[in-house]
Length: 258
Image 1 (cartoon, rainbow, N blue to C red):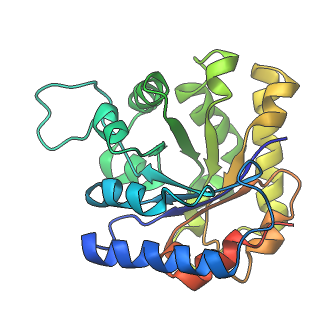
Image 2: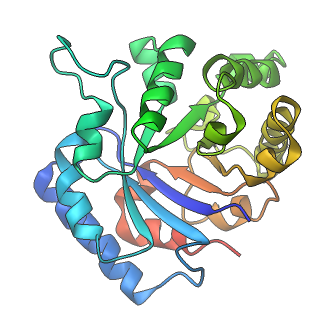
């Protein structure tokens, strides 16, 4: 049975002090509203800024539901890349996940399929879990090319992996037209794409691999719509942006699984 995940992506928000405060608020709210699922069934992942990684790991260490993620990594092991953060550095903080290929990274930093494949490889090499993002812009969907684009994103950065390594990846589908806009894909639209992604994986590997992959929805997930989105057969949770910065809302999302 594939794991359910409620992941928060804080993006470039909070500093060390406010980040610590937010994590404490989330943990306090979880103590009051403990998920009915076990940690083996449901995982909470906090994607915090680099400066907060070590502190975050220490703060959540006593809550078996909660893990910590970096929001990005560099595509090389080490070297003369001033200002970049390697997977090894991230691992040394105790973080267990890395968000890779977020639409903002693709758009603003021109991250290519090849670069993202290298990031995935390094993340897996060091024993961490990639949360690999894919998704289309509005003009691509309106042109009816969204399925082709998502398939190409998966093939270009993930399908070089063998079945065992691929099975360690979490996928997050993020319709770019629904990120930070207040517009959300309908539950039916989310399910349609998630089912397509699972079918595409089954065609590349096999059905058992596809059935075990966790696929998250990331596009203006909030406290009011999470339950309906998460009730879809192939939606295994969410990669949550703005709502993850509000402890009460995020804990409501965490408790939105059936």
